[in-house]
Length: 144
Image 1 (cartoon, rainbow, N blue to C red):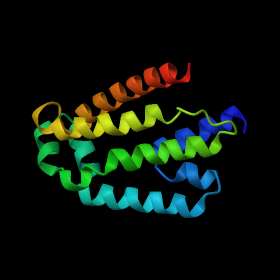
Image 2 (image 1 turned 30 degrees about the vertical axis):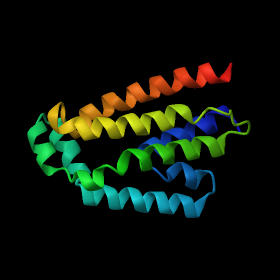
Image 3 (image 1 turned 120 degrees about the vertical axis):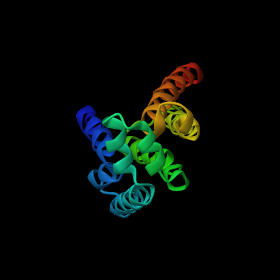
Image 4 (image 1 turned 180 degrees about the vertical axis):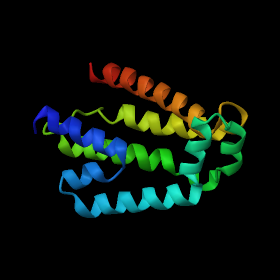
């Protein structure tokens, strides 16, 4: 697959989990991921949480979030991104999943601590990027 197409799948999956799968012609998986994203988004009140966070109402975001549902989001989101990226790759690398897995794990941990610092959007994103960095480091370390 052309590198630009691989990047396209990755970017559409970041926009909404399942879109990359649809582009990869994995229709059942794509529809399932979209349905999961919509269900988790709705049940966790994620759009309201994002809106409150972006307008600086962190206390409102924390109060609005349904953490029991929101805890599923990082793993579903990162799995959707990784799966679309992997399926678009003609030569999968053995540890290419590390940045995605560690991003999901760290984001979930960030979400757990988010009521105490920065709220459910910002702390989760900070931890997610730390997880990506750890994953890239470990991917390079194990690939040698």
